[in-house]
Length: 587
Image (cartoon, rainbow, N blue to C red; front, side, top):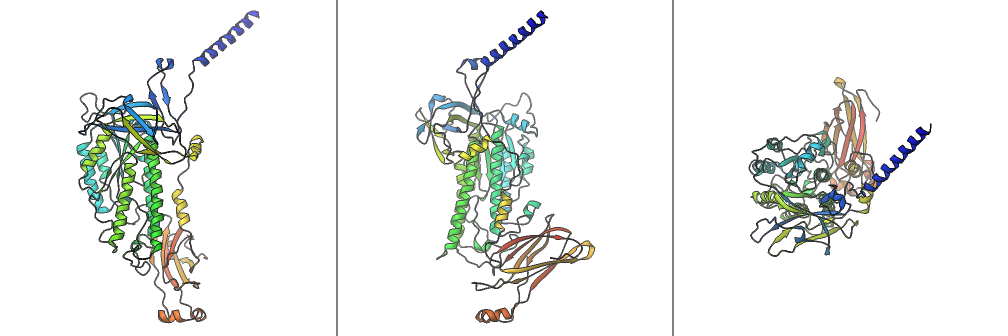
């Protein structure tokens, strides 16, 4: 009995000694980077006893900043023999302490005589493993079909195919993305032939609104300016998602080749239509050649606020690119562009056209210059700009530091990289957008994954009528042949209060739950018993006594849910949903 007690005490004592020894040997935990931070982890050479035992130190945090520096001599040749002591980094004119330093250099003519290159798998871990080496260049080609015309997409395809065939090396990882492509479907691959096949399917649809899929069927029935805003949001959101995905693959430099003609929310009056895939009606939208000529405060105000909103959207993209060390190289496939709008579009004044052209080109320049890339704009020969992208990804210095100010104000903070060695030139990004307090709180809290709802919320808000009700509508259903439903839509104008004219016609678009259109067009204009001038001179009482006839239209629909979009001649759009079945249903 005593022997068992002695053995038990010996075991307990041995466990206590092991626990105490483990507590003394356990290193202090370094702060970990959270999603959405300025960076994640950077290894540094050892300075303590723990590092001598092969335990690396990871430096990271919400305010950790990385800077890619490109150094050349006076003749433009790259220089790669600098050390960490040769660099000084200033943030808002305050000297920072550089605690990570790495020279990244890619051999443009790799030796492939040894083991053959392995193919890249489709899983995320395979992508991370393939991109983990700093001497592997990573490119993603973003084909913004929403903002490239069909004719210019032909030129872009030729340029990209020639670039991949003649300028890339076998070790380069390349991916292709479209605005509507889920970011999880983006694949980095060394199979450049597969990339070329994906590029050859690129077709621009700028200012073309034919429905291509179920997603577009949800919003193409809206007015032109709303559809353009939705397209801008889809494209820029996809860019942010792409940069976030690339930031999770590697710490080093990532290059995004953006093929686009630029972004704008403003649509001239000549292109506005109550239904985007219907041409603008001259009776609804007056043919104003120059909306900015004379005193037109409405168009000036709209242009100003739409431009400000677009710059805010671009700022969000730039913030994401800064956090995940991704650079945008924007390519305008128009080349040396002289006009924004084509000859087949309604006549637009030269001044309006030039304003739109400058703004779209400026959006490409802002995205490129503020993310450390280059803007290939107004150039018929695109090869020098693409070659510069390759040179930037082939050799640079990767510097990292923890910001002394640790800003959480969401503002732009300037970065200046200086060299102590004379006779050299350095190029680096001009600064970064700091995180906000809300970003920090969100990164420190977990939440369930939910699909994005920004577009649905925006569409619901834009669909709300902004003025009073101008027409009265009625929808009825009856049984048709072959199990279908006959839908009757009728409308009449309401009494105008404080307006000169009543609504004269209504644009009707009826869509099924599968995306097909049952009816799309303008309901015929109502007939009036007398001339327009005579009608205007009548008193309200006389006009009410002679009510205009009700205008109607009939069409057939499949059983199920039908969505109907209505727009009248002075710009009110509404949306309603109905259930249709083979039998009659009361409206």
